[in-house]
Length: 155
Length: 179
Image (cartoon, rainbow over all chains, first blue to last red; front, top):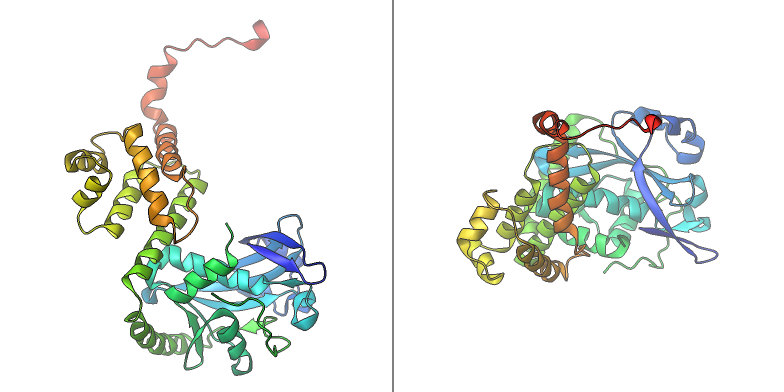
């Protein structure tokens, strides 16, 4: 997986790994939008460039095995990477794809990753990541997940 | 294919601070029920080919996970993965044995751990997998070999109690400081 520097157009390989205890001191609400300590006990992952310890994005999620589904609880890029002035492209796309790969590993063709964002930003996820809309819930299933993997996963 | 460079009128914070947590378990279950209905409807339009792609991806990810997990165990992962691989691609295992030009009996012996796979078998499996994964995802040629030997290493390390004392009788220890 890679991110692209918007200014230089340089491409950097990234890694996605579980958040460690020591990370909680630096994933502050000011920079990462939430009090991530509340997510201790949930599946919680960070995205970093391979050559840097800076955390560019975070995601927490929960497995719902009885529905062959993973539900994304919180998702954010770092403050420097929000909106049109972002430094890197594809942070959220990589995080969503990573969760989708975990869903495939667990549930194969039945895999589903869901997200329930505010109505005002739902369209962004539908257009950019091919998400389906059911009520207020957005989801990617097998066909969309295969597309995400093709687009974002270069392993 | 998803267009990563869509020229959207993006909501400024669309990927910053997305809170998607359910307020209660009841909410989650209600959403899950509606979502499941919609998923089942959509699933009807998913082709058999895509379903096999999903299964192959799952197998690939599980094989990768096994290779990263260095904890010793006694499971027969090679034959587990091989059985899954064959069963997702064929209705009958004998058809797979035909395709790689071995007898159904030999395949059965390998799958039941009554016989070790020969090098010829491993090479044919490697070539078969290259074709199967061709339009799905990248698949390391060496994966089956790695799984096979990883399993051997794991078994050997976890069964030290069984072989160590017998082996140690044949090994003389020389203290390097006395040399």
